[in-house]
Structures are given as structure tokens and as C-alpha cells.
Image 1: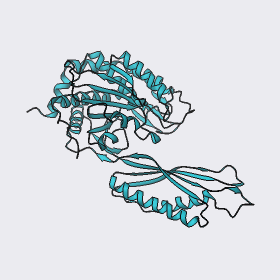
Image 2: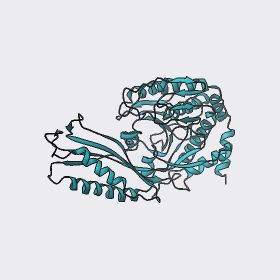
Image 3: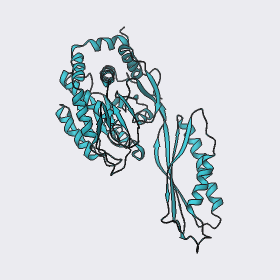
Length: 410
């Protein structure tokens, strides 16, 4: 019986795959041009439509089929399988990269070049993954390489921050029959995120009557009360196993230095590798907040509102998953030392549904992620692109062989 490693070696020896590798080797300038163009199109959270439209045009140029925007704004297209389509073409493999950046509307995104480096907000996260998405589509087209099952290409919305995986949630809402998912995320040749870091996000808002800082000094101050609550939860012990973290990302309120504010707001980010621990810690911190506010609200003039603004599930790809075995075999073939990591990516959502999924790097190196000083250097990314291509084609073969080839996690 042929081993997974043997299958990868045979796949890599296929002349069509060599043609695809050849395209990747010769077209770094094209990839760089695509990357510069897409970076210059702002894609703040909930405003990714211009960049999505640019991707639809590229998908058309690269010979993909069924090119469209779905109802939520994901740019989607299909690479057809090697066998003729039937009324029931079977499951597909999703290859995705997220369109959005963390940067708000109005951020200057025009890229600059410094030697081999590209400098711009979002230059790596996730322009690197998006460029790899186009590179794989282009290499398949050039090599006339039809996969064993349909590949659903997705430049999706809503991965960052308040987007709360809305693009992935929609893709997996029932319209597509997806056997496995591969998300292209950031830089690196060897990384794989096979453990989904869960998170809960909350907006804490305190409102009161407000007033003049002197004349109404006896009235409660929402900023003071909220600050007391934040200080209290900052002292709350968090477990190291499973690792769990809590931080306050933003705080706002008030109109002037000599006014008692009418409101104060803080956004909290709670993360853990364990869904159960998220439940426990969430209950503890919300109890602490309510107790602290109650103590500061003796005259009942303050109103507390707690809204959940994000919920990313924690999950793990099974160690014996064929999808992970395939990637490890590809890495052995390419002499890559696989770097398994935990992270919060688009793979979180399918993993939480029991669908095999992982996220892998798109090559190159980067720094300053999520800052205005972000940079990306594509030097050497060809190795990562070969890795993605081989992994994708093997995943399609496994998906096509049996409906149970990628068993769902319990």
C-alpha cells in the first residue's frame, strides 16, 4: 500500500506539477506586482468590497469558474476537477486567504519598496496570503493541472478583530460541500496552525447622568467606576495551563476635562486554548465587573451594559488527521521542519464544526505585524508556494477517494 510520503513523491514527479513549479519560479515579479496592487486598495473591517472586486477580476484572468461575490462579500471561484462534473460533484477543498486588515478607514496603505522589502500596513497580514492564493491559481492554470476534486478559492472577509470570522461563518453555513480547508495566513515556509486559539470579546459600557466637574461633583463618574472594574479584573488570576490571557484593548469616554462623562466604554479580549476554560474565566470576569460596579453605584445612577462583540471557538486538528499527515509528508519531501503552532485564524471556524482545517504561511519574512510599520520580504517564498501546491493537490486526492477520507472530529 502506497504511503502518504510515497504519494507526495509521485505527485511531485508529475510533469504537470513540474510545470506549475516552473511558473512559480519564473514569476516572482508578477507576484510582487499583484501584492503591491492589492495592498494599495484599503480593506478595513466591514469595508473589503473594493479589494474583493479586484480579486474577482484576477480570478477571471486566471481561468477560474463560477466567479462571484457571495451575500456577505467573499470573492469566490472554482477550479474544476479532472473528471467531468456531475449533478453531485462531491466535496471540495477550500483554499482561502482573508481580505481584511486591522487598520481603520482612512489609513494610508500606499506601499513603499525598500530593496526586497515591501513596506505598508497589511503588507504581510494578509497580502502575503492573498498573493499566494493567486499564485496557486495561476500555476494550476499554466500547467493545465486539474485537481482530483473541486477547489473553492476564497478571498474572504471578516477575519480580523470585530469581523469575528463572518466570512468563514458564511462559507460554512451550508451553501458549499467542503471536505477540508486550508487558510493562507502571513509569512513563513514551515508554519502550520493546527490548534485554534479561542477568544471572547466584550464591550463594557457604563452610562450616568454626567455633569459639571465642580457643580455636580457628587455624581458618580463612569470613567472612575469603569477604571475600578478594569483594575479588579486585571488582578484576577489566570491559569497557565491551559494558557489563558485577558487584556483591555481600547477605552474611551468623556467630552472635556471639566465635565463628568455621561459614559465610558472598554473593549476586552479574553483568549484560551480551551473552550471550557473560556467559559469559566468569562463567568469569573463578568462577575467581578458586576460586583465592582455595584459597589461603586450606591445611588443607582450608573447603568452597566456588557455586550459580547466576538466569539472565536477553540479547537484542535486531530493529530492523526489525514490533512495534517499530508502536510507533514509534504514537508518531509521538501526538507522542511514543520513548525506546529496555536493561533487565531480562519481555520478556527471549520475546526469548531469538526471539519479538518489548518492555516499555513505563504513564505517570506515579515515584521511589525498589525502596526503602521509592517513590512514583508518575499525572498524565498517559492518554497512555501510549492508546499501549498503539493498539500492542496494531495488534499484534493484524499477528498475525492472517499467521503470519509477526512473524518470529522467528534
